[in-house]
Length: 187
Ligand SMILES: *[C@@H]1O[C@H](CO)[C@@H](O)[C@H](O)[C@H]1NC(C)=O
Ligand SMILES: *[C@@H]1O[C@H](CO)[C@@H](O)[C@H](O)[C@H]1NC(C)=O
Ligand SMILES: [Cu+2]
Image 1: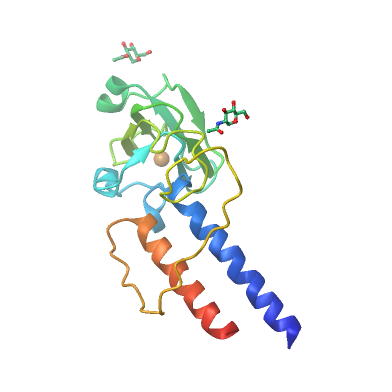
Image 2 (image 1 turned 30 degrees about the vertical axis):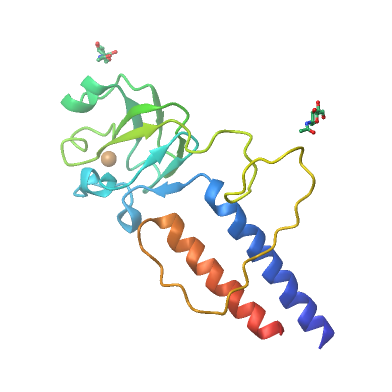
């Protein structure tokens, strides 16, 4: 039984670490979600309400060779002009790290596909958190980094309803709930 308890505690610790890292983790966005990168999807609608920051990345999923992911400039995006891409990929799973702030434009380079909806523009903000800030969730940068043992706020398992105000906070709430459950099991 000690073994089980140990492993459960271990998992809880991993989850706790994960949870504390979440606020500073870059977000990976799957373009089009389950629809992927395809014709007939409205990527303006998909991007609406999402916030993109330097450090985040976009993942385009599609049949390899069936489409391309071309980063283009604003005018080529607006006119669906193919051939002048800044970068291109047709692997079927294209990850684009958003490295610079500003608007980034993507189209499919297959003739006609951009006109059929395969165009995405994302407004990328400067990096959300100042670099160098470790995974301290809210604690002010005190003096020199003496290893502060994280004291998790072990409130009673009042299941915090995910505020659904964003992907990150939902994930955080989920992980917190899981940790609460693990703590219950262990004790
Ligand atoms: C976009 O790229 C095309 C082709 O290289 C060029 O002719 C055009 O001037 C560029 N437009 C902008 C706004 O940079
Ligand atoms: C932190 O450490 C640096 C050198 O490691 C030292 O120069 C600085 O005075 C220290 N600051 C505090 C607040 O202890
Ligand atoms: Cu295409």
